[in-house]
Image (cartoon, rainbow, N blue to C red; front, side, top):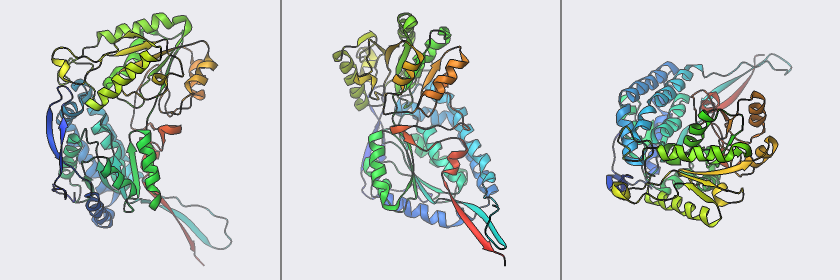
Length: 473
C-alpha cells in the first residue's frame, strides 16, 4: 500500500495451502480494516501526480509493466500453479494472454478522447465532451486464474487514469502480490496500485466504502448480489462477472474428431474451475451414445498428477472446501438418478490421495431439472443431455438463470448463426471453446453479471463523460 510493503493493523495472518498435498505453502498478512488505509493511499495518488501524467507517459509505464510480466512470466506461472493447482503447462501458456492484455490496454491510452458535438441551440453555442477517469477503483479477483483476472482488473483502470485497490482471493494471493511488485518496479507512482490480501470482510469493506468509485468483481453470483446491495451508499459503478452453467451443443453434422476433445476440455480444463465451462453438454440424439462414450474415453486418457510436472493435464481442485463441494455434487447426481459413465470419485490412493484430486466425470441420463444440470459445480463434471431438434435445444439451453458462455459444434453456417442468435449468453463459441482475445468483450447475461471485460467498452467503463457547453457570444 502506498508504494511499500506494510504490516496490517490487526497483525492477523493466514496460510496459503498447496492443493496437491494439503500442506502449508506460505503465510500471508490478513487485511480487513486496512481497506481504509488503502483507499486513502489510492485517493491521494489519484488527486496527485498520477492525474497530471500525459497519456504518453502513462502508456510508457504500462508498456514497461508488459515487458516485466513477459520477462517474469515463469515466476508468475509457478506461483499460480503452486497456490491454486493449475497445471504448469497451462499457466506458462497464459504468458501470451497476460502480455497481450497489458499491451492492448496500453495501446488505448493515447486514444482516449472526447467529441466535438454540433448542437441546435440558438446562438453561437459550442459544445464538446471530455472523458475523465472515474477515480478510485476496487478489484476483487477469484482464485481460478489469479494473474489473468488481476490484469483484467488493474490494467484497464490504470490505462484510463484511475488508481486501484486489488483484493485477491484468500486462496490465491501470491502472484497478485508479485504482480504488484513488478508494477512498482515499472515506475508506477506510490499509491496508484494497492494489493490487500484478505477474506470476505475485506471485500465487504470495499463494496460499502464511499471512497471507492467503481468496483470490479469476478466470483459467485451470491457474493456479487451482496456487493450490489452494499454498493448503494455512493451508487458505485459496478462490473460483475459471475457464475455460469453454460450449454455446449453438438449437432450430428459436427466434426466429431474436433468436437470430442473440444467438448471434453470445455469442462476438464483447469479441473472444471472456469466460470464459462460448457458443463451442460447437449448432444443430438442420433450421435448421443457414440459421442458421450468418446468424451468419457478422452477424459480417461488425461494425465492426472502433480501440477508442477510439464506432462500433467488434470490437476487438483484448489482447496478442501472445493473438493467437498464437487464430491457433494457427485453424490447428488447419483441420488437424482443420473448414471456415471466415467470418473465420479475423489482420487484417494497413492500420492494423489493427500491432495484435492477428482476424476474427470461424465454423467449420462441427465434431466434438465437435476441440480447437476442447473447449479454451478466448478469441477471436472459433465452433464450429458440428449436433444432432438434445433429449436428445442435453444430453448433448453436458455432454461437457466445464467448466461455467461455457450458453444456450438456444427459444419452448417446456417445452424451456427441461428443458434448464436438464439442463445442468451455473453459469448457463443462455434467449433471451439474458451478462446479469448483482448479485443473481444467477455461478460454475462442474466445472473452471470453485467459489464464487459476486454475490448473498447472495457476501458470506457473506467471513464466519466463530461459535457461542456459554451456561449461564445
